[in-house]
Image (cartoon, rainbow, N blue to C red; front, side):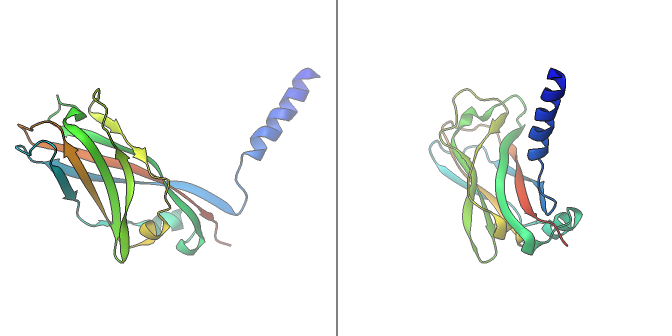
Length: 175
């Protein structure tokens, strides 16, 4: 009897966590590569802009049985930097970093940041994500991801890194 009671409680608990029949949520991943040239001065702001990226959001919406006009929320779910080169280095050369998103007709918004960058780092730096809404940006045809960083070391080698992020998208399903 005790096991049956526990089973019923667990069944209701897991059932209450499911989304409604008319709701959908999914993640959309993006990556952008950046490079910082050697011989950049210490405490000098570095602005790097990536090329325009096609969002392919219409296809992602269709794959998840929704559409742009049914999206209710787009938030930054996860963001990190991965140092690609030099492979033996870490992110200790950075004092701060801020990643932004832009789209035609929209002001830039901060996606994620680290300020200050911890002294003890590896070749992967998990960033603090913004709690803003990015619906208009993800619905756009193209976005531009850019970075603003400040170094606290003199760089003797070029450094390349990849920004990786996931947007959490919530919306209603097509009828």
